[in-house]
Image 1 (cartoon, rainbow, N blue to C red):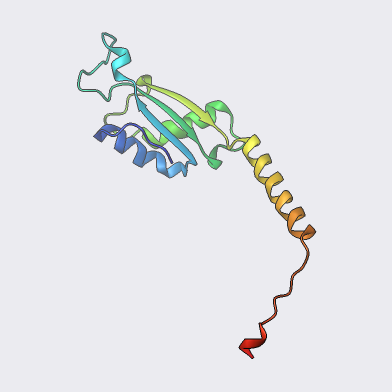
Image 2 (image 1 turned 120 degrees about the horizontal axis):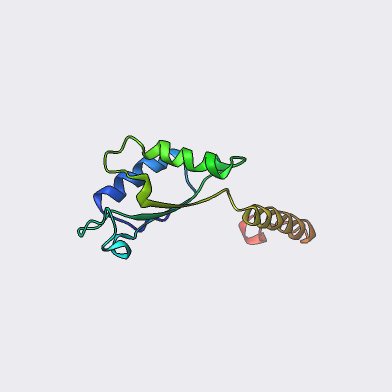
Length: 125
């Protein structure tokens, strides 16, 4: 898990999002980019970008994924959905394909290696 934002609001959001068992979790405080916009707080932690990847999102639509995130955060008093940009991913299909290919390659190499029997040197007898 990767987490960039470190203030108390960010820490509480990350704690709540752990319920989704993310394999990737990045929460970036974008507050300074929103200076002069509604809801801007000069002390920070008013606008965030969230990137999250979780097996819990597998087979879910984009809307269902975002609902899951909002449900995880909704009871948090400082949470304002309009100030959160969300990038949601399923587990990367490319990563899954790569892992499967790597496992097959290891099996092929292992089976191609000569079988070596180790023998005790005579001085151990």
